[in-house]
Image 1 (cartoon, rainbow, N blue to C red):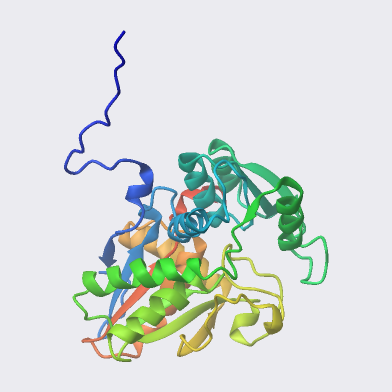
Image 2 (image 1 turned 60 degrees about the horizontal axis):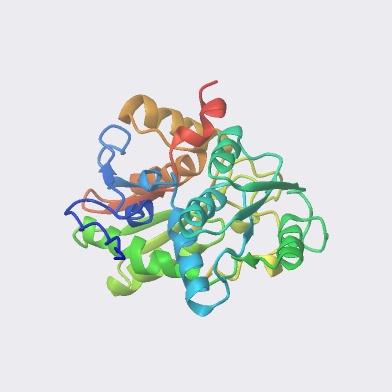
Length: 322
């Protein structure tokens, strides 16, 4: 009796082994109509091109791979996280490929499109009170902690796990530097967990010897901007929690400044990007680009402002197409 072994198929140039290999290397596009006349160039990095549809694919993969490597996430163990959507989608995608079930704790305000994507990836959904404060046992992070403990699961801790900003320090920042040929002078990014701005911003400040200026984009109602705190209507960014409970992943020494713009400007920017540039992005991208346009208007034409657009319009069609 002979036994046969099935060998792995030969690798083919230009063919990815899995969707995980498609994470990153997202395109950058110049705004040709919206950029202020006589001001700086405005470039947009389109993170919606990631396979899960957002910048959160990057930390999701980094968080899981680091946990697997350190033994914190055993084979087949569940992944548990509290998220407004995109990190959950990234974790559900990575979990599907790596063999981990995923439990997502979310607030009731998550867009129907995000909920549908999570279900398609096979994630279990648990709703919690997104307005609950940090001391309330019903807040999403506390609920996720309890579920992880009860089920022997692993909490990715996207707000505090350094593997989150590390993904942007190792990949997002270097991509921007390479794609602009080192010409970038300003980076604009929204602040949610703090991973993107802290990781990419720190890399760009270091590699440019401090020449690159980093600006945080803050939505109306968010405490990050230091103004009045109220409901935050832009998904995935901002916080209403006091500074003592801000994410550990937010390195406050990285942004040179944080600018707040009104929701009306955010959604107008989303609409103008679609109408004038044929670029379809979500509200948090409208936030970053809206701030970038304001920054660019005060700069000379030789300046290069890069805004990170976290996701596309796909997850918000019901909201944006009204």
